[in-house]
Length: 585
Image: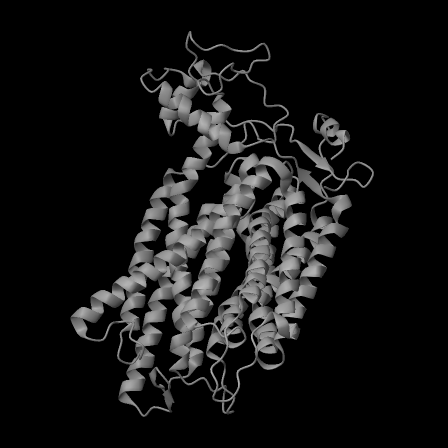
């Protein structure tokens, strides 16, 4: 960046927010990026086993490590973004990294020297050579770098384009979160249907080339919008400030709490040039207030800053740490909620395999893995209806700017998850009962008899799941963006992906425990390979009880929670990037 960026940072003029005008570039970048990444990774397990001839367990481990690293890597990407590079630079670098990874993955399919030879009839399939594995791992590493930078920054970067100090800007932010998730879901639908079909039935090289080209378009759209973006400048490590508050509070833990903390706590250090809004004092987590108690040993510099920031902290630093601590109980509830989403996505495929998948009176069978698209389709239809029809009505009824508070939206989503699991149990009970009491229509290899119940019954819980996500997950995205301190918003978005990874691990743990316990006591576990011999419906009810308890926990946390409020509108350190004002790093 040129020095002009710092000069503009110190001016009193607000950035020229483009809002809706910047959305085609931001949302377009997101749509093509998701089409590219999901299109490349969704069928990767099949690619590794069929083209690279990996054993199923080996390929599964590779995919699990890849997905887990992508989600956990968002914390590293978010830290680097908020601390050193800013969202624009991080997104630009990560987008190029993703494109290069997809391009290399395409080459593994298109160039015969980069994958094992095709298996001959009756001969043993040759595995990948060390060189081929190195090239493949290099592809995946580039994709991990891209995902780690794009996932935590893209959503926050898009919301940064709206003015948070105006009513239209705040409404624009809320609407943006709705349409962002809609775009993400649409990209998943296209990837899981059209692109996966091309990869599996036409050509792996063409099937990978299409996502790579779409990722190229994503990069092009992103850089085309450079001149109109508003970009938040990083202020250094936000985690250092958090650590200083914790250390200072521990050092002063034996001090008595002040009678009037609003007046007596250290609050003289100017934050006028900070990107963080000025926060009012809150009486939660009061043990942290001790970090801002001034003692005779504390020295203050002439500019009002503490001489030793590891012993004396500004009350604004303390309040920002409180913001993070307040979010954590809600984050835990979000992790438990996502367990229900994972369970539905996993087991509905197995249910479909043992249900009548014929479409109407035709002989065409809907692929079992395609049923999950119903939830995405429900979300795709629901979001525009909610954003354009229901929200304006709720504004008139409740008098709130967004119709509902963020936590109310999340709570409604959690309530839908309880209903979803109950309905899932009822549908599975019906499928199993018909399979055991009426003639079956076939036999699924390695599974069991196919129930004559129409697979379309599975649409009921999937539609409810889609609506649940429309409330809960979109609300979570908005919640973590708005409630984290401004200089940690990318880290806040990373919390979502880390929570998703934790929920996936917990789902596997719960399934393993239930498999072990019920298998010992009944011979066949609830999660038997043949669903007709198991009791998947009981498992759904168990997850439903867990979601109900989580809903109660969430309501308690929501009642206790205090939203982050700005005491005044501070001058936000931003720069509107103009071609004559900057050098692209």
